[in-house]
Length: 166
Image (cartoon, rainbow, N blue to C red; front, side, top):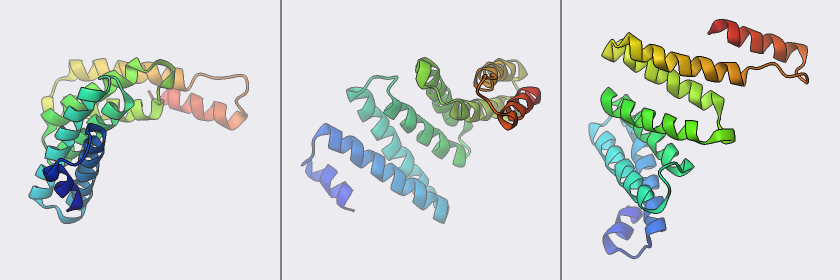
């Protein structure tokens, strides 16, 4: 692969290296989905971890690029049933989401929190911790689905339904 040659020959700067690690992790992750080859999973993890290490050297630990890398790593670990590693990465990603203030994407938070709750209940059998994350999901659902005066009738019904489901 051309990316691996660039790494071996060290003809790139640090930011290009971050980009290459991200691309290699993505390639291995997508190949892993197609072939179910364990080697692709290991390579996706290897390059994902290298990408994360490089990102942390050059970006803030709360940067959106770090969060995206953590999400991807968590998905890889989840796909190979390494739930502890997946949980650690999802949890770190959630912490970054929650520190982003007004830039919060409630749908993504909801998905991550739902996954963490699933881990606690089905794999760790820790219902108290699952409840803690359920409260986080509840809090963000209430914020996201708060009624606004400019909502039309369908939007109001949808928001009320979402709040009633929690």
